[in-house]
Image 1 (cartoon, rainbow, N blue to C red):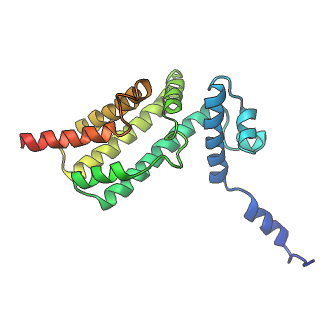
Image 2: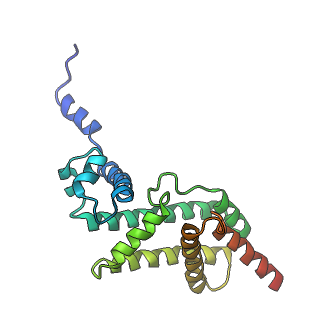
Amino acid sequence: MGVLPEGGLHRLEEETRPTREETREKLFQAAAEVFEEQGIGAASIEAIAAAAGLTRGAFYSNFSDKDELIIAMLEDHVDRSIRHHRELLAHHRTPDAFVAALRASDRNRDDPLGRAPLLHIELILFAARSERRRPELAKRLRMRRALVAEILARIGIGDPAQGSAMLLALEDGFRLHRLIDPASTPADSFVRALDELQRLKAVRG
C-alpha cells in the first residue's frame, strides 16, 4: 500500500469536500423536494438537510433559518434566468431570432423552481407575507425588469421600461393560468404571445 506524501491526506480531504456552491445546490434541490412533499410550513430543517445528505450543521453554515433558504432559492432562480437570457441575447440580437431561441431553449433542466412552477409561486407568496422579506422580492423583481428592459433596448422594441413590466406581467399571468387550466394554456403560451405581439407590430407598421 502506497504512502501519501506529507500533507497528502489534507489535500485529499479538501478535494473531496463539497464546495459552498455545491452544498447550497444540494440544499436547494432537497428543499424543493421536501417542500413539495410536506408543504413549506411543515418542512423542517432536519428533513431538508437529511434529504440533501448533509448534517444540520451544514445547513446552518449556509443559512440562518428556513426563511433565508427560501429567499436564496428565489434569488438562485432569478440569477439562473438572467444568465440564461443574457447568453441568448449575446447570440440572437433581432426580435425574431431572440424569440425563436427562447422557444427552443430549456432553462429549467437544472433549476429546481423552474421545474416546479407551483412551488415557485408558493415560495413567492410565503416570502411576500413577511414584511421583513418582501423587499428582497421587490429587489429581484426590479432585476428581472431591468434585464427585460435591456433586451428590449438592444433589439429595438418600444419603451423598454414599460415594455419590461408588461412582458413580465404577461409571463407570470400565463404561468398562473397554466397551473389553473393547463388544457387551455399550452406550455409555450408566453412565447406564442410574443409572436402575436410581433405580428401586430408588423401589421401596424
